[in-house]
Length: 325
Image (tube, rainbow, N blue to C red; front, side):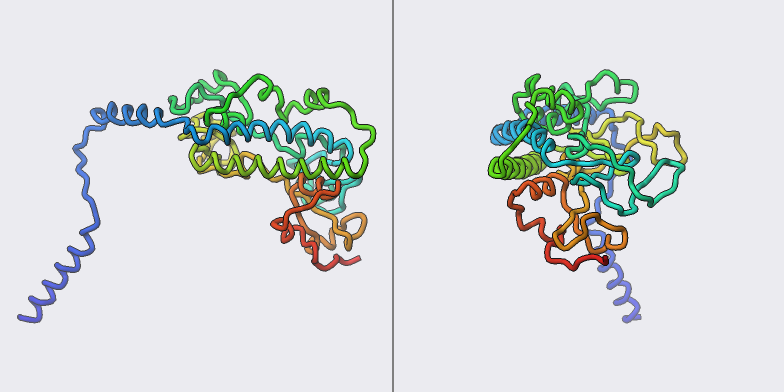
């Protein structure tokens, strides 16, 4: 009997220890009465934004974005870029590679050789757009309201919510309208090697300033990205526009699956195959395991004579073995 009593006491003590950290909520809570308190907290939270210390960072990001588009529009006239006609693959050089990574058409053959055409600015700087909100903590955009809001660059919207002075000039310099940007830039007929190297170093430094500034802003200002279709929403909660078509049980107008966005979601790194000095003139499919990768902007700047940061040396495989001939 004494042993049984001790065992029961031990079980009771163990149960108390395990349930000490649990909270039991009552189901009698009236959420309608708490709605006003929740809305009041949201309004009070909106008073803390924009953060004054991050306003200069947002202005620097806007300036870096405009400078990057202008400088890259000049550099792309000197360093040729080709793009695949049927998939988002890009290659820096006059001729494309022979690596069989083309997606092809929807019903076409996969893993085939790319069909290369002349690339543009939006092939290097991928345009990422989002809804332009009236305020940071406004109501969630419904599906029927998707045409009531303009679509702007995600970086510009992030800087605007961070307190930057967004002018019409920032909105006009959009990567998507690359033709308008190239008209503003004079045609480059000849650049000396020193000037070309200076331009490439400037593009690379501006690229790093842009990404670092966006990373700082994302630590304070929330942004969401869809897990399946890469839709971006700058704000505390995503919109409800049914534009995602990943789910098989839904139509092509499905709901987004939101998660926290990062720097690569707002400023994507367009990764390309990079040719090293020990590689053949045209990259072959047999040596794809030996070749290195690099962001398209970094590869363009390296071909123009810029000094590449050491953090890209690993993915570039600079000291790697050459591929089979």
